[in-house]
Image 1: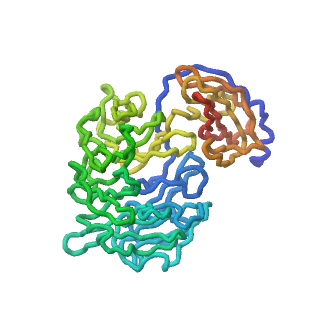
Image 2: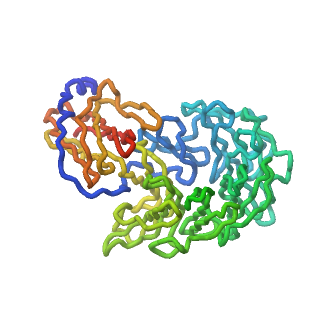
Image 3: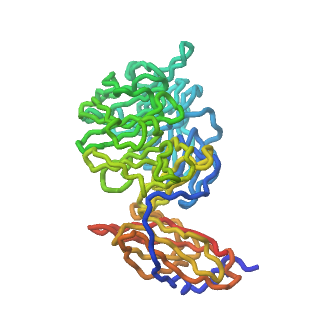
Length: 512
């Protein structure tokens, strides 16, 4: 049997350059793929654990690492963590010790003696536990945490959420101040964080009143309004306004929706019953941390109770924040339904429903999407969506954004023509690259070059027409020695004015 190296050597590189322009079809923005494990850490953090340029997922100290933007690996313990000691909803992350690498604070559920575990990263996906003395002795019951510079000394401090369980248990949360080297002490003012009125399930920090320090939003576990706490600049918080109409929620999203320079708030919950409310709230800030509810004025295609855990994201990359919402089925025609609603912003807080033609559809009229996470999962410069699966609600699916994308509708087969489909904005110039071995070169804003340069060849460039789709075709040689050989493809895009360069995702597929 020939080794893969010998197979690669026998493949004529000219085969990779037999690229012929073909017809095109209408572009769609979000399209589903398969290849996810049956269990992913979908309710936690989306972050690049191993610094390879591809976002990973983490929840309660367990992670799903990505494999080059194609699939997530099965859940495993965070590298460097010996055991899981509880379930949390939100864990804080950032560079706590000033070394330029990602660190993580795992919020504790009554973990004695420090109410959490601080892990320092080395920038290569490995973590080590900080000495116990680096955290205050405080066996606090907490469900969530957030990292922010609360005292204005240019390092990241920690805020831990509180928890209240009837009359039997009470924890008001805590503020831990950083000395700049990742060593934390409890805030000297025991009243720096006001008493919890209910359990905190999410925390959001930002300057909400325009005074230059970070304020805090607490999302509650029971059906009471969420609250804004204002910072005095030294990490001492006092009650501000409550968020109008809100009755708890699972996730807080923030950003400037109306272009007035202050941060607005989104509060999102599970449709089928999460913590508190079962409807979203979109709240505009007047610049002084007072908010008005504009949810009812949004062009939602169904009742306001039909939407789950969404996000503020710039899905169309025009420089302003849009709103993505998972939803109950929305009828497109008599047989198709969509479950991702895209509310597209004009930059001034005026939205239109841009879902039809840009969100995937299903024939299942009963399926409800309950949550989503947005990130550039395949490192091609646009935002993709991870959400629950349209067939099996206990599974998960990835929706690749076709703003920039390459894919093959079918695998390469001996003796048969093969098509590689390229998606990009109209008038974009694309240069294809093909190779025989995988690479992993993180080039920052340009993307991740996923092909070994030693085996790669560059094809002729081409411009995309108004359809935004271009098909590359070539004939696979009828040579049995090529069976099982994996081909790797990528495009370099030149788009916009002024011209911006961006790598596509890397597409890999074995010859059959």
